Image 1 (cartoon, helix red, strand yellow):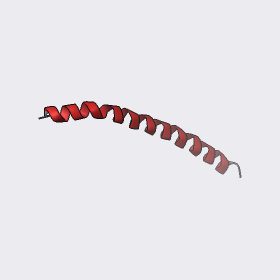
Image 2 (spheres, one colour):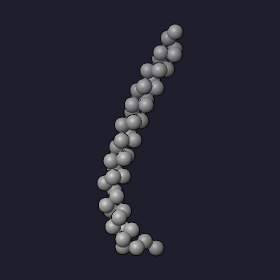
Image 3 (cartoon, one colour):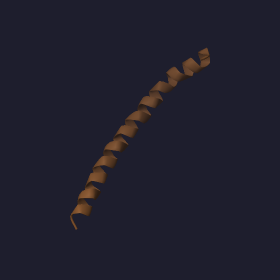
Image 4 (cartoon, one colour):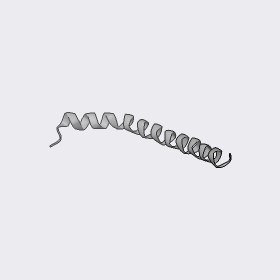
Amino acid sequence: MFSKNSVQYYKQDTDSIEKISMLIEVWEIIYLMTGSKSKTFQRKP
């Protein structure tokens, strides 16, 4: 079902996908750190 053009595009797009996944991982770490900080602030009045 896949044409040669789509396969070539997928191979070229894998680099950007890896970059996006790295950014998502960084944002998840930031979200977890900020979330844990906000939770600790909420626990301590």
